[in-house]
Image (cartoon, rainbow, N blue to C red; front, side, top):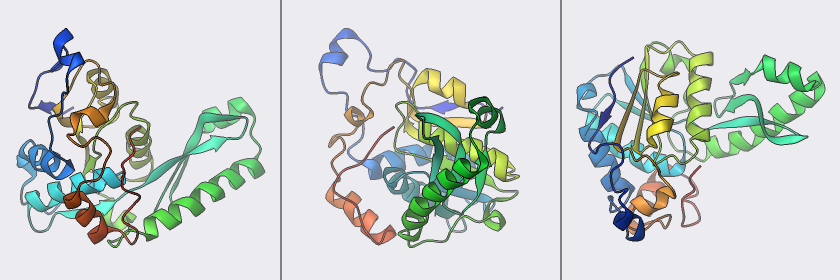
Length: 248
């Protein structure tokens, strides 16, 4: 596994006093993207690198990262959702990506006794939702041709539970033969970083606290979309969003 990179040590901003005051580190996601790109300098100018953003907030960060890495580095929107089990909605039976690829966790599916028909209906429902979200992105769809054999830098704007990122990297590992998978996020819980390193080749961040709490607190405007972020979203998506970002 590659060494991790972080601009601030784990535990940053976690003194008793810092818990009581604002800990904002980034003006917005554009600022966060530029800082994150500084920790990804080894990939500058590498045409084998593809930046994959797994959320709309991550797309703002990822667009800045891809631009900083230089011409030839593609930026794609890679949206992945879990396949829910109707009786236990929080249980994932696998995942579906916006490119139509499917990963089924056969061990879980067998253990809960889900029928093939029920599984197929769940997959179709998720796929329909993802198709709309993927189609809203102006850029290219992340197909096997664009991902196989590449160094994939998977970007989000922050992780609290990390469910979205975990589903994305497990899906990538299962469905594609990537040369390397690297997670890049401005804010990543220290324990979550350790968990992710079981599945990826490296985790690059700016802030790696022992306790994240609400990721929004690391941004000056929290979940509110700034004017510059909205401009970036409007440039990338047919529908630029509802004025706020979501974290998982």
